Length: 513
Image 1 (cartoon, rainbow, N blue to C red):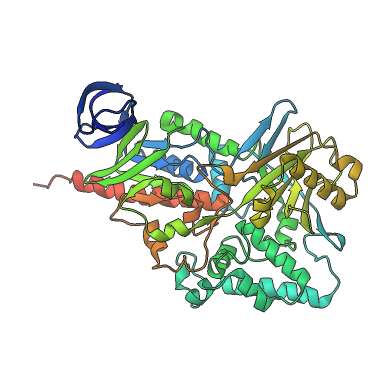
Image 2: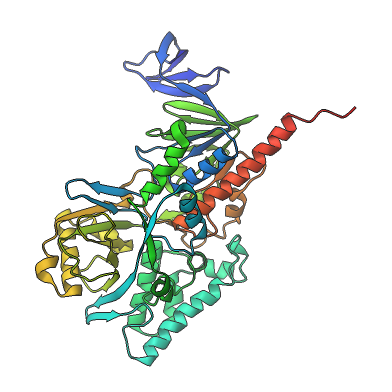
């Protein structure tokens, strides 16, 4: 606790720091005449000094903090919410002996940086073998393997192949680090994916698949997202066929889960960082000062050499940055997503990683899968509501969403007696998270990505002290946990380079005699 002489400003009182600069404010009632000195009061306002402050204790921020700590830097991680993990969130149900990932959950061997991190920190994983894929439309239920399509019509198959191969071909023309340098960047950034599909897709059945593809990856509608941004995203995620109904990689490699849930990875990282992580402490201001940066919250301040912002774009507007980020950053939009899980006595849908795609009137769900984790007493099935359907589903009650999910499984697996009697139902609406605001990653509306090429400049400014992490700053694995790890490592490496240069300048070697 520090003692400060406060100055009244209405019913708010300014708290000066050691240098006399204002480091905080405290409310008081009744107010005292503006400008009047009110004497010495006791105010809980802790002041810290460290090398680097990491704002955000999600996977990206914790990855950055881990690397900085390994290089001998004194790190402070400041998290606004009361938990770590960001967009990973493992929900525990002790009564049923269950855990479920209500946030990010899956990893594949191709995600090399995420894979290496899990190996380095000792997190154990298990493989979920591939199973059948079920596609439910108003015309019926189709069952097929990950290497086939639910149609025998050669023209439909050709249409499907053409649109996704075209997306892959165009995506390969976009430089990952500088998408605004693509040959047709301005043209593509002025269009939406709806515009692209309107002139590329022939059949309605294929159009349903392409629209669902956008809704699953971007959590937004095709008419909302920039064509340039989405093609760039496709390039980051392994190509157009990676997340469609046809996914040969899933058939050969399978997918992996973290024992105890994906949030467990973040908890292990926090254990390694010890008391360097502070929760329930929203950062309100970040200011460049002459010899570093000042990070302020309503509880404490940190004086550091650099700061890493590892938060989603909605949090940029919650923090007063000096100098400020370009205005275009505030036009990056979080998608809409709600993740829902049902627990049952038996897995009546079958064994392996059973996947479900749905597209029929009245069904809010787009994509689902077997979500049974090792050690769980009962099997589980999880599904996503994304895009416009997620905003519409908010008007439903929780019971109505639960019933719609049960009916969807009953229709897909022709087992109404079991599907309509779940043991439990849980859901997570990510748009209600105050310090995240949506998922899985933000999307770019038309015209934002090519706006003055400012994203390239803001990702790394060697003259500044503020560095961006978080999955939205990734140019590899954007929107995934791989991207979060990649961005965290990149931001940490940039900070290490800058801090090392500062140290060299401030402590020059003695001249040889």
